[in-house]
Amino acid sequence: MKLIARAIAAGLVLLACTLPSLMPSFASQNSCVMPNTGTVSGLTLVNDINACNGSLLTLYSGGSAPSSPSTGMFWYDTGTNYVRQFDGTSWQPIWYVDATNHLTTHAIGGGITSASLLAAATTDIGSVPQAFVTVTGNTAISSFGSSAVVGSMHVIKFTGTPVLTYNATSLILPGAGNIVVSAGDMAFAIYLGSGNWQVLFYQPGNGTALVNTAIPLGTVYFGTFGTIPPKTVLAYGQALLRSTYPAYLAAVTRAQPMTRTAGNATLASVADTSGFGVGMPVEGPGIAVGCTVASLVANTSITLNNTSCVTANGSATITVFLTGYGSGGSNSTVGVVDCRGVGLAGRDDLGTVLANRLSNATANNSFLGSQTQTITTSNMPSHAHNIYFTDPGHIHGHPVSGYAQAGADNGGVVGTTPNGWGGSGTPQNTLTAYTGAYIGSAPNVNNSTTTSAGSGTAMSIVQPTRVLDCVQAVIP
Image (tube, rainbow, N blue to C red):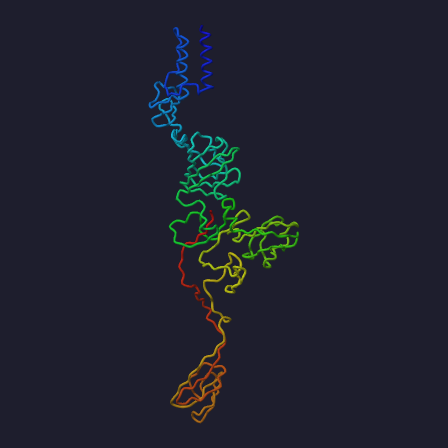
């Protein structure tokens, strides 16, 4: 009899699990503990099993929590429409059921304290159960690890200043470039599987946009800044690591196709040389490290500083660094504009048409002018002076180059004393090219030409200038 009852019960359980539509469509919180002593009729056992299955299939639905719950037990709270799970002490909300629109809403990271991870090259945010993770420290991050569930979403808060290193496959970042993190920044990322992540959203803590298209990379601007604006650096000609600022590197370099011949310093078939200038570093296949522009033919060719610069024949793309490598930099850096103590001027050949306003001003990052100018002999042109003589009392002659001119004074005695008056008079400085003049009661005028001369004293040529901070945009 017991064997028959057990068979019937097992069959009913199987039927209830595989064909839930046959079960009563009512909410219940019945016990699933079957009698294990005494005599139980088959019908009673079947009813108990059906009641238990009703509770299981409806997740013990009801307006109040089931009594005597077990750890891990689920309950559909019809009072709030939340499905909850008992953690041994309290009922935790798992997801919300919208019975009107037949939708469910799942919390992301809700109900559990944020985990804290130290920034590392691989910061495995899936290694903790929390969806909300705080990352401390400043070490550059190139991966978020591979422990997360594929498709899972994670919220990340940064308290340090690491650099998120962009990778088009494994760490896809907004702006397609590295992100220099500031304390307080937050990110929202999804795990794509195989160690690959995509950051769907990144919000700087100061409220600015991550990518500001209104200020293109490389823009130089002046202002009075209590703190340096986000995504900029002070522009004093320094070197920046390319690995940290890849987007800026792309913005201030120009790639051009060209052809090369080993041992020949001239790179041919360069279609656009606008903005290129002497001294700019050049890199590319078949070009040695440390080579720079020595000269160029506009929109035709570039000649490098040494024939040993070109090491192989071929055609490829070269890269010219418009801002150089930066002070003390190398082929791992890119330079920032140096605007200390200088103003800015537009390139003289913008639009390929020379304005002829500034000499040697066709290359980007050119430096012209000086703060002062010294007047020298070559700067002072020859010129004439008018000389006035007035002696209304009598008429006499004046000497020229040290020799007295005959005059009517005292019988026209001719003096012979250099640098002096005729006869006896007060010596005067020599006047060159003076041919003599008799001066009566009215002034006479004569011309004397001087040689070029200068004081040798520097004079300022700085226009009235307002001094401000100068920064350059280096982060998107």
